[in-house]
Structure formats: structure tokens, C-alpha cells
Length: 240
Image 1 (cartoon, rainbow, N blue to C red):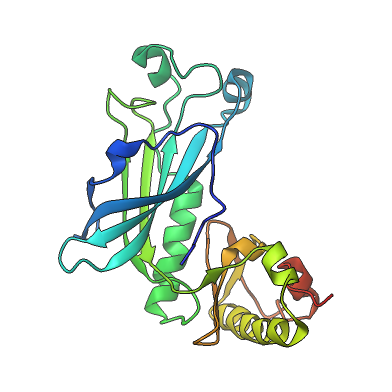
Image 2 (image 1 turned 180 degrees about the vertical axis):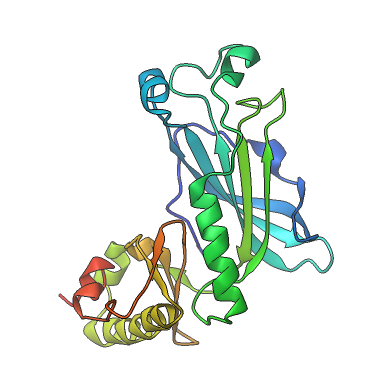
């Protein structure tokens, strides 16, 4: 499986010493990080930070293992990083940038996955654990946020617009049918994912399931939120 294989970054914020770390989650589960899949940064300037309080961050995707039974899962770690040009400032100066609270992206995804998991949604990853803490005095932004979300590792192909375009019409129609079923399942559970990207879909052709992942941005669906075929193009799934 190549979930989140599109994550890449010019600067490595999550270095090799992350491998082997054990994370104790809030729900009393423990997870050992075993493999890094990729990371993606969002960086702002000092001016952005001081005027608008835009906090720079890097999000890394790991494979982890349950310490009790070695079951594999996906761990998403969201970490505050220094704004542009301050990476090598003193720890005291970097600490002045610290935002200690859990990020909205993390809390929203945890809430969505928690509710969808309890509802036994078949097309979204099950929530396995979560944790929020602040960085130590030896970290990149002392006192800055550090969020962990552990979720089920799903089997299948992570999509991309280019891969979808390469499919013949019969295969693409099978994918469309599975996606529509999953999309309506989420609507019926009152969830509408706002991050419309093929990269947030995992296609398990053997099971005929199109999983919907990455629930950092969503709204509550309502009776006016209906399916229409334009949704295919919004998710890069239109027929050519």
C-alpha cells in the first residue's frame, strides 16, 4: 500500500531518530514508529507569524505497530516548526513562536474518525489512538504543538489524477460506483469531506471499496446535501 506517497519535502524535519519511538496515546494504546512514508510542510514568514499568527508546521506520515500485538497502523504527526529564516535561532528565540494548543486540523480529524468509527463506517479508517503534547526545550519550537493521530492502515491503491486518467472506462466506472457508495455512506452519517482530491481516496479493487481518508476539513451534512454526478469531477474521477 502506498498511502500518502505524495508527501515529500525539501527539508527533513522528522529525522531518523523518530524511528523506534514509542507513543503512549490518550486511550491507553501504545504505538512504535517503524517506517516513515513522507512529510509535508507549511511554512510562513516572520511577518506572517507576527501580523496574522500563522504557525508553520510539518505533517509526517509514519507506519507504526501496536505494542501489544504488532498490528500495523498509520500515524500522522503534526509538529510546529520555526518560521522561515529562524531554524538556527537560539531555543529561547524559537520558543517565542510557540503555540501550545492542539491544531484545528488534528482535532477535526480525530472527531470525525471517532464518530465514523463508532458508527462502523465501512469506507473510512478506524481511529486507533491520539495524543497531544508540547515540544521539549531541545525540540524545534520549545513549547510548540505536537499532535499524533493513529488510524487504521487501509489496503489499496492511493489514487492520483494521473493514475485515474490511465484507467479504461470500464475500470473507471467500477471505481466511480464504489466512490459514490462510499460518499453516500458518509453523507448518511452526516459527514461531508471538503478536501476534494484523488489523493484522499484509496481504491481496494478486490473488495470493491473506495475509502475516503484525510478528514481534517469537513462539515456536517444536512438534508440539502445530496449526491450529484458533478461530484466525480470534484474528486478527479470524471470520465474522459
